[in-house]
Image 1: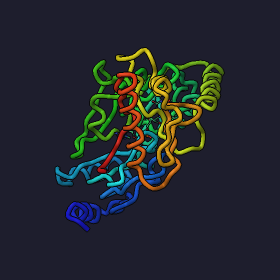
Image 2: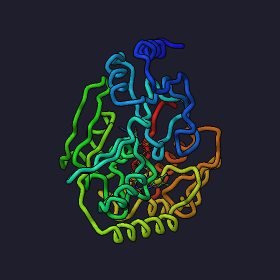
Image 3: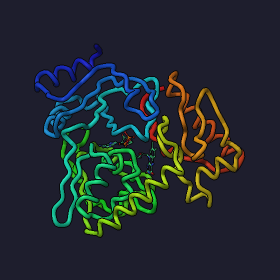
Image 4: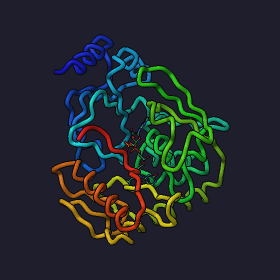
Length: 307
Ligand SMILES: Cc1cc2nc3c(=O)[nH]c(=O)nc-3n(C[C@H](O)[C@H](O)[C@H](O)COP(=O)(O)OP(=O)(O)OC[C@H]3O[C@@H](n4cnc5c(N)ncnc54)[C@H](O)[C@@H]3O)c2cc1C
């Protein structure tokens, strides 16, 4: 056990934490690609209070990385140094009052969407098709079918890497396309959304439409992390998948990694040797699109850890 692990072990034991923790823990099952390196220290806190305590006692130089459901990440083979936090049951609350929906960061987007349907709350239909958590959605400004997380976002309750409580309110500068500019520096613990009552039949119809469209246009039951590259709206009239197609790279394959037949911006991984190979595949695509079409693609997938 190294020094960082020893420090965290002492904090966990001293505070008799109820959460789960492991050292040099392989994260393959926490990435939708089904492969990835180890967390130096892996921790699923049992509650906000417990997480706050652990963070406040940890040395500042021990990095903190949060993962959600792993539907938009590559975890490199060299693993993630420091403390890797995955929020679990202590962060699964959902409720609403007159004007606001409250959702813990570990709540799955689909679960939130169903909750809203049950309570005739309109606008959250798009979350039905996004396979991540509320924390991941706020961090990525996840969206589809014309809606984005920022459209309903009021504020996020977060912790800093040293356990300080931080509240981030909606502002124009907070979010941009598939990105927020501040939340990714914090651990998002709960998000509050604007609530609007709608007709449950309309909400349900929209969910069915979104679900059907997804089944038609996206691969099912494969190891993918959704859109690989952002659409370069500021640099091209074409979407990322169209650029990949135009560059003649739709059929490109490397070591059991290729694009989905249904969607030329979704990487499908069919190998269990290395997560770095998935990054290499994406980097080759970036290079070739730049060479052939002169447009620089930008990763939407977050790449975590060391090579
Ligand atoms: C089949 C498929 C379809 C998809 N379709 C869409 C789509 O239509 N639209 C879309 O926007 N995305 C889509 N995605 C991508 C992905 O589902 C979203 O980006 C989702 O919001 C990621 O959430 P997650 O919990 O899986 O986060 P992860 O993938 O685990 O993490 C993503 C990023 O969020 C950070 N993060 C996660 N939780 C927290 C937290 N609590 N606090 C701070 N940071 C956090 C991580 O550090 C990482 O940087 C799709 C993915 C797949 C596999």
